[in-house]
Amino acid sequence: MSSRAEDDLSCPVCHDIFKNPVVLSCSHSFCKDCLQKWWMGKEIRVCPCCMRRSSKTDPPRNLALKNLVETFLLKKERKRGSAGSETLCSLHSERLKLFCLDHKQPVCVICRDSKNHHNHRFRPIDEAAQDHKEELQKSLKPLQEKLKRFKEFKGNCDETAEYIKVQAGQTEEQIREQFKKLHQFLEEEQEARICALREEEEQKSQRMKEKIEALSREIEALSDTVRATEEELRAEDVPFLQSYKAAVERVQQHPLLDDPQLISGALIDVAKHLGNLSFNIWNKMEERVSYTPVILDPNTADPELVVSGDLTSVRCGKRQRLPKTPERIKFSCSVLGSEGFNSGTHSWSVEVGDNKDWELGLLSEYIQMNGRLQSGLWRILFSNGKFTALSTSDPEEDLPVKKQLRRIRVHLDYDKGKLSFFNLDTNTHIHTFTHTFTDTLFPYIYTENPLPLKILSEKVNPC
Image 1 (cartoon, helix red, strand yellow):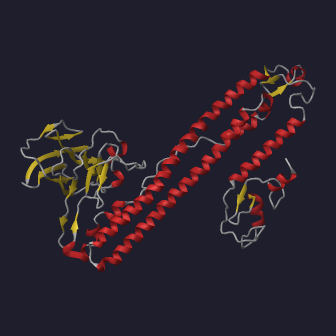
Image 2 (tube, helix red, strand yellow):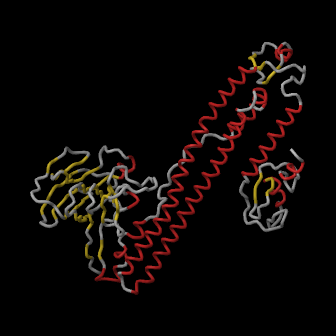
């Protein structure tokens, strides 16, 4: 405990040990109150040491310096206690063999018989130390568990941050691919869309960066508290009990916060950038424009599915490592459309080809959010050579389809409560579900087959 160490931990303004230190962009640190008093009445806020201008009216806390100060003061307090015969009573110079349960402090046998401790309850020092260590350990356990969950959550955030960059790169590549097929006069449109992607990447990366930094600070604070408390638990009985009150207060200064929640909408909105790209500029391209009425959302796709670059087809492939997000579908081998329907009529066609295992239909938003099939999934399916109509609100029904279906038309009349399926090649009716829809419905595709299911594009006549 040299005077040099104390000087290093002293505020340049008040020359006392730092209290609630904050740090400026020039790296100089001060007590928060000292800095605010220094700036009071000044039009320009500058560093008291180097006079460099500060752009922040409320500088961030210097947690590392705060922890150093706390450790320094704790060691200084221990040294002061050890220098004064730590195992002897300061009043009677007798060994501290008892612990007063009423005053919460170690005492000697003479203290026990004194007026100050009349009718008090006592325990042997070793029993009291063991009981209080167990009590503090119980208080520490939730913090340790919370720290573990925060670290696990931060790991997923790190993975999400990396995947955002991968998504941004893949999306940019797809944008460039599609624009290469268009005429040169679309170059300005192309650059505008890439700019929008860059802006979204920057915004969402910054949002995730801030989330990670906040988690890191919370983890650091929790880690320091856990580390300091664990050090207290390893102390001898008397020093432990002497600093027990401060240890409990330090633990209780960190209330158990709620578990962090996954950020909704954290990933790049790929569907916004790639979905219906040619349709959005169809008035410039006229005859070259095609429109796909349903665009798949890769952020909802099960990790075993591979969504095509233009977001119109899907197949089963090798399981991918993807970050956990609220949008990811709760059911295996499935993917949803990027837009939901809650009114009007909507139609789209799907080419199933030679795929031997598929489902087509609609999934309600409630089911997607809660992940439990109660009432909200309507689909027709093909498996083991048999066609079936199946929903969560109606009994299973075999479909009298004689020939293999290759292209299927899906038609939703939300207001009339009808979801119909047709053989697009023969224009014949396959099945109709009747239900009073109340929730937003998303196009739903399921497959465990490597052959793709493709949503067919449609020609759009220019206005």
